[in-house]
Length: 182
Image (cartoon, rainbow, N blue to C red; front, side, top):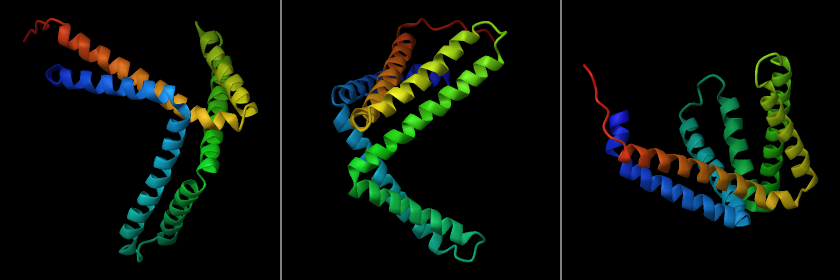
């Protein structure tokens, strides 16, 4: 794996640069990015539902067919809802993300309190508390939050991944080959 990364480090560098650029664009235009994420998700749900529905046609005799059929129908309905009502879909996705922040934060607070004698447990408590406070702040700022939150999260993720991938590729390219012993 290491040799493969070394051999293809140029392409990792290019990929990292493109991801960083895309992330910066998402951060500069968070409303556009949020709407794009919502529309892509809507289309993925519709296309995925259609494909699963086609695959399910030949499986009518299998057990739990109707459960799978309901899943296909829900995928199609949610996807079409998001495509037809992009604003409401964006609000729904933002609410789900806020709930994720809240539950993740609460679970980290509980975890931190349960490991309290261990060193640095306070950092876990701080992280969880920050997530809970962020969730309440974002919820209090709805519906304005829905316009930018997904785009900002996407931008941060892309910049983080792009910079780390570029740094790895750069370090691999500039490092001397290690001496290997048999």
